Length: 383
Image 1 (cartoon, helix red, strand yellow):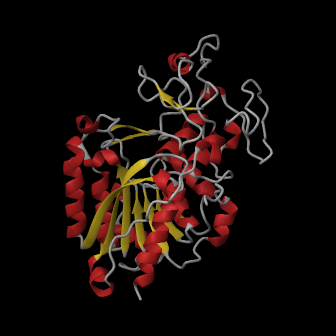
Image 2 (cartoon, rainbow, N blue to C red; image 1 turned 180 degrees about the vertical axis):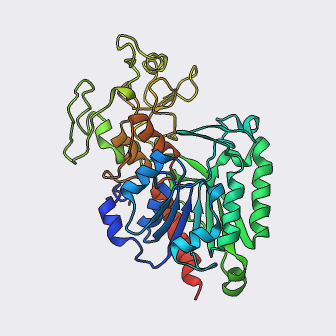
Image 3 (cartoon, one colour; image 1 turned 90 degrees about the vertical axis):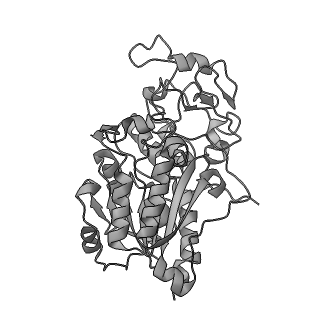
């Protein structure tokens, strides 16, 4: 039987963080999606590195006690800096986590046309195609027992395949047995279909001594729908949101359902008398349908997991994932639920910046199940 969908609160997670005794360091930590997944699984995150200021602000707002948050560019970080900050020796860290920015490999991006060049990324401008190399440098210098790196599925397709094969070779040369696998978070307890590529490596001396190997969780026998996570989106399951109300709208569960003007497609921010083109197109769709004109415009089916929520999808003029019954994007409260964050998780900045934080995140519930498997199938066997 499928259990009810519920994400523990930040306070609940803080109370149990570190209870399994294992330690994690994370690069490209964003607002803390992957870190929160490890924390849900009982790990202690001792160090987190994030270059984008607004993402770092959100991470700090939800961080556990004692987590070192480093805002430097990874290019300026020495592996010994991490070990010193975490009070560990080389080889002692349990897991080194990392999610190098994926725009250089995304099928939705410019891919190889911008390799070697600086480009806009979030609120900064930087080169992104070399960041995976610097993550490998951290693995080589820190020598964690296990590493786990996440990227887009596009890394194994088309012109990006060379980068994928080079990464595998680099990890193996660093002394790790490595496996790469595509993972859909919808089958790991998340109410969102998001396919990501995971590299997982176990240090070779541990493979030889303890007969352990990279290990991934088995898919659950069920999925969660939008309505499971956000029952208020369906008119007969909860009150609909009154879009014109400016005051905070709180439902019986204590969730703030107020919707910002920025999320609406039927009313332009600069000229409220006009709708955005995607808002007009939305009216032609039924729940569960995708536009032929704007390929990425989807009027969601509330009885299925949400399609992938992207970093730029919150802009009202963007063709992206939308509410099933209201001519708008999802509210931040809804995005939290659909991305596996607790209701009290703090996203900082504007609506668009908060939406971006969720769109760039590793979904916590999926990472929790990945972390649980690493704990039981690898770390617990190193005795």
